[in-house]
Image (cartoon, rainbow over all chains, first blue to last red; front, side, top):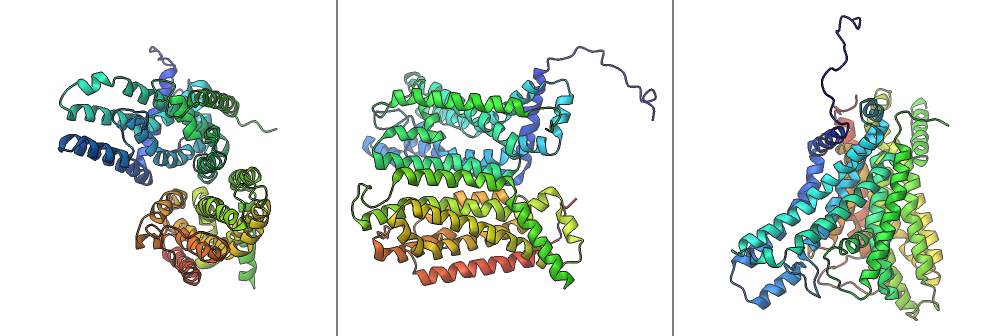
Length: 296
Length: 259
């Protein structure tokens, strides 16, 4: 069929900004993630943890218990509705508890959302549209960040709202207004770091197995080795070897409570470490995302 | 004769594809991290703070062997190759070209398994040898003692992940959830439920074999190990049963995602 018969013609309407393309990438990425049944198993793990904390708050606020019993139960579950010198912000602890489910979900999402674009040649299609590689990268980073936020920040905020609602007054929210800000800042660090690392890793490794191995080595094994080294040398600086603890320390810079001496200094070092690795990863990612595969 | 030659060709091709893959490079990441940890930690008798051989051996066994090597390094090495040997063909849609050849299906899977097993065993045992050398005298003692549990666990994981690969479409996902979540979760639950985890038998063997050399027994409230003999039998049964089930599933199953 000739092109004249098909009535191809230029678009005469007003063109939107190419940044809208990033949002479309996010929408498609969400559909891809939630379409897979196997991913729901991992999401289910996260939901189970959320239900556990939701039930804990319900029981603690609705049943008559002594203050001592309440503190003991909260301590068993590592949850504190109000941060103290001994215990961190309970909502942030909840987000940390979700880390294993987030880690596994991201290990799979990396291959699905980014790796396949390179392997199946979808990247050339994306970049043949009106978007530039900057919009593509931003779209993919936002997609991963949305997955992280849905598993951590959103349920943590729901728990905060739930605690306030069940106390039958607004006093809890008014007295602890810093808690959601601390949750949001920790969530922002999680989203930024995890998305940049994952998208870069997936752009280079592409297949699920190598991504999963590297991702789990980074988040499971480094954490374990960091714990051993910290305990054997009695030096908390080894916390910087664990990416989760690094992110937690950086998150604490905004309305966090410091539990150990020297934690604030370590948080600044963690910030430097994460900022450097993210900058390097971004540079590598920009270099990797090309419309045409360059063969040298 | 022609069938044997075809089978051997498939085995060698699969072996080379697995060896020269990104997984090999990425498996080096945790292995190098472990080596650096051991170089820093120095379990050598004399330079380590704890003093006696038994205490150092206990530290090395509990911290490194059981928590890092058994619960992480072995499953990850097995996962890197065992899920991609047949799973990679499914993912790349090249399994169809294998199935249309006049080779029985069970022989195809057997070739994949035989290509994977020496690779995983080679990497795991070689890295275990290097790690034990880095750990000094306690490491040398541990290498001789813990080689059987390492061998049987690797075998069991490889067979189990092949079963996952022929059963599930996204076997890497299932294997990773199993290795990092289910094994850890089940392995730390009180009672009998932990007996379905591969790592339980590996750890039981280590506790049994290492007891005479200073490895302290685990808290009986949480972990009641079985004897080394029972653990060997269980792991062998798991491996053989897993392979037989995988062969049967692969022979009879109609894969609808080949094209």
